[in-house]
Image 1 (cartoon, helix red, strand yellow):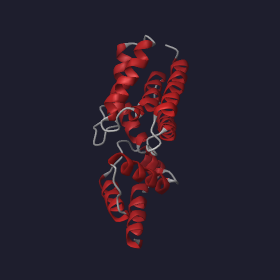
Image 2: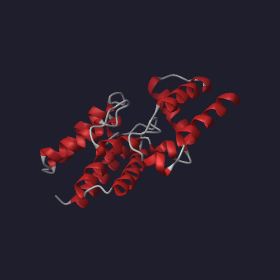
Image 3: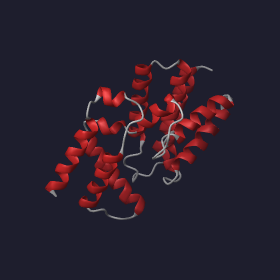
Length: 199
């Protein structure tokens, strides 16, 4: 298998799918999010010294992990998995490789328990936006997306209370972000509390 070729093909395929088919109302789980997860996955893969095949599994999975939003946002991981499998089977990729990629996608489900280091990395990369300097702007995009999908309007109070609960119960599966961004979760929690106090 030519690793670079299949990664490039994945990037092009997913980018085109999202560009052509993703609803404008999906403001967070879009191509920019996919790119950020790919970038975070690569950084973590290098940090942990993953093998070339592990990096390839990780990168392809990162590109595909949320593509299911073009069909059905609820339970999109299974749809993403199916799209990925069809893409790789068409390119005669081995069953073992496809299975590893599929398991990585499923590891991005909320409250998942990753089965190995590669799955733990993609799961953490999916939440790398927590460490981003634009976190609160991204958070607003996510709020609008949730409102769009649920055809409702959430009060600021409700949204930031829910976000505080999420941040307070969330933990990374690897030590990468704790080392690179010491105390980032505590910082976000304090910022969230300040937002609630100002409402």
